[in-house]
Amino acid sequence: MKKLLPISPPLISSYPYYAGPLAILASRGNHYIPWALSNFIQLSIDNNYKLDYFQPWITWKPYECPFLDVQIINRDIFSSQQEPSAIVEEIIKSIDRGYYVYLKVNHQYLSISSNWYQQVDTAHELLIYGYCKVTESFQVADNFGGKYDFKNCPFDEFIQSCTFSPSINIDHYNKIILMKPLEDAFVGFDLLRVIDSLRDYIESRITEIRNDLSINWARNIVVGIRVYQKIEEYLELLIEQPDKKLDHRIFHVLWEHKCCMTRRIEYMRENGLLTDDTILFQQKELEKKALLFRNCALKYIVTKDIRIIQKIYKEINPFAIQEANLTSYMIEHICHINSKTDYEHILGTDLNYNLRWFLAKPVESGED
Image 1 (tube, rainbow, N blue to C red):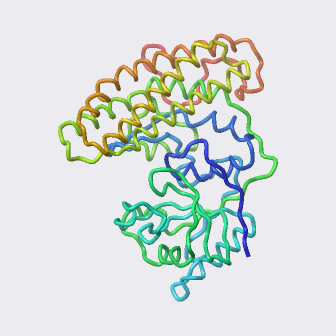
Image 2: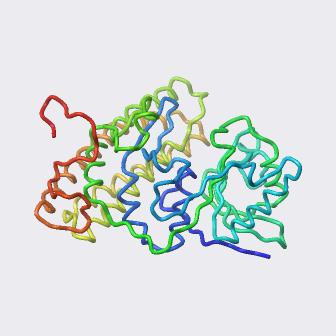
Image 3: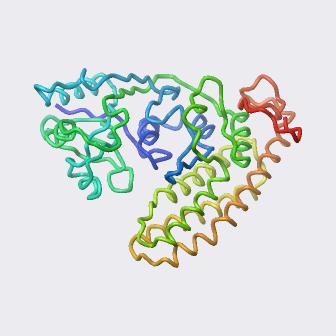
């Protein structure tokens, strides 16, 4: 009559396509943390000023998450035009088999969604991790109103959200993802990947790893430390057009990125891969500053005081310079103290830290 699969607050929650998988993993302990901290380093921003992690392998299709068995099926296998309620029974069967169900629905028909979603005919992701036949409801997770949360969704509202197709954000709408945690999976901390990703970040370079599709879809984005130039550009637009609505998600992603970097530095420090405590101290200062940016953005949404945006604009470039300097120093420090140590964290075949994961051609200046 009732079943709930384990779920916990995710390490990163800005967007549901990685919040969902990470929420599943978090419910089973910290074994996934070394893998997660080896990723989620690079940032990207597109021409619409959407700031996000540059993780091409996890955006909506988490094939490469080593801790999850992922099955992607067509929606029509789960549902029927003649019997819209059939999707409920299929989801219940999947949950009984231990699968979390992830799909896009029309949030306009869900009372648990924010007022904005209820006013717009748009599709948005939903993670279903439990059900109760007595109350006729699913347990679901999503960014319902600006915060990743866990809520109760009545069957009848869910059926409506699947029956009335949305007109906006319909990519992958006809797909359903089933995710089940893999038993005894383990992936260690990849120091070589971390170092290379940090280099890519401060040099604003897209890492083109063999067999990924980044070279195809990442043509019109800016990555790394240059994202701050785009954020400045966005703030200039707000100052010039005060009627333009602020997208606070930019600053939430920025803050979560600094929180994740703090966690990464703490992990390396605890495992002897980093010993300079000033790095952690300065990173925590950046994290506090990023949180201030985020809170100021939320305040601006309420007050519309343009001086708030002007203040953030003045402080963004110094923030970027401080972060670039800290990251450069951190790379140098990590490479120096680990250059002659055979750590199991290093997954490369050579302890030469001049090696790179990326396949981009070296610049003429003689860079390796």
